[in-house]
Length: 62
Image 1 (cartoon, rainbow, N blue to C red):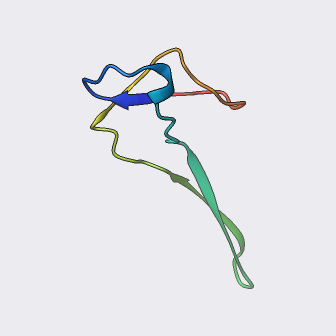
Image 2 (image 1 turned 180 degrees about the vertical axis):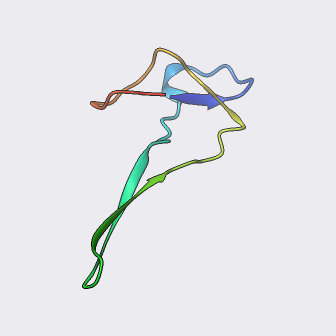
């Protein structure tokens, strides 16, 4: 959960931004399957993290 830097926002105004990762799975007859991990890396420079608020079934990790 994040909010814009310097703004006092009520809980309904928080934003959930996904900064997770994903994989690209490819297949070729010669190489077979390949799995390439990728990181989703958005620009959060105008936002600040709100600690202690996280709504997801997944575990949050650094």
